[in-house]
Image (cartoon, rainbow, N blue to C red):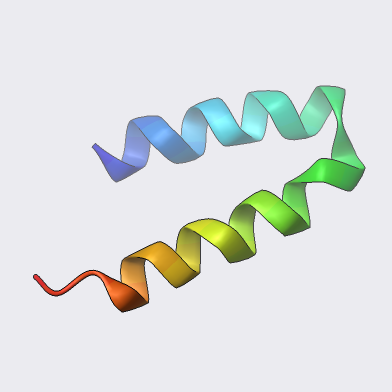
Length: 36
């Protein structure tokens, strides 16, 4: 699940490098705030 997400994220990063940090940080926040 997360692997597919990061694969898509990497594809987007190639097109929009400046967008990557914001999306990455936002995703990390979701992972941290989400109780497993």
